[in-house]
Image (cartoon, rainbow, N blue to C red; front, side, top):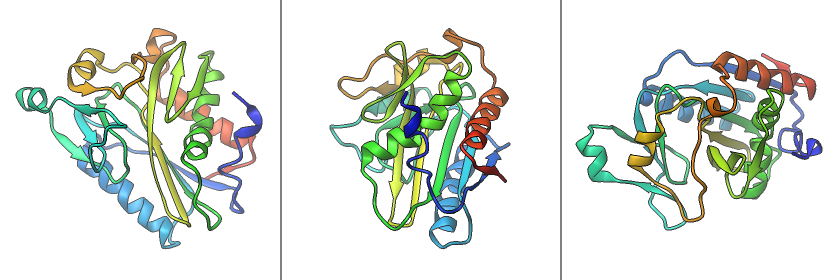
Amino acid sequence: MNEASVDLLFNTPAKEIRVVHEVSTDPLYNLSVEEATFQSLEEGRLGNTLRFWVNDMCLVRGRARTPKYGWYREEEAKRLAVPVYERSTGGGVVYHDHGNLNWSFFIRVPGKLLSPERVFKDGSAFVVEALRRNSIDAYFASPNRIEVAGYKISGMAARSTIHTLLVHGTLLLDSNLEMLNMLCIPPQGCPPVQNIINWRNLQVAEIIDSVKAVLEDKGYKIM
């Protein structure tokens, strides 16, 4: 990873960021907090925020199905009684369970829209660096994922205005990949998924502490 790129996206006047680790694993609650946090930043009532959250087993899909992104096997989801929810960002369908850690950066941006490649590369840079500090050779892979050794360990989606950016992603720690592969249809060209536990048994607290350390090393005050 190019270390110099880590600070590009978050080089904002306010070098402060609030870090929240949600206790609830209710998908409806967590998705509603995503929306409320975005609106609070958009209206200037909240500053830069990083959320970490975990959902009970479910599927979370983007706003619309498009050929560019993957989808899910609808009949299989119904048969297995796996609930399906919709998020405010674009992209395909993501499988959630307690082995998948979600991270969300909400950032006030300086009055202009950013390119998708910059959003995803720079938005994931702190997570990538945190993993590398834990001896996991993670790297950004275009268009919107983090990989290790050719395997996908994180997918991302984003939403932005001229004032506010949300970039959020998954992190497969020890997820049920059999269920994931049964339910999800990957986009064309997407590599196979793999859990981080395949390389190292990292706990949620270790990842959060590592991301916070990267932020602090780049001059951010953790709120």
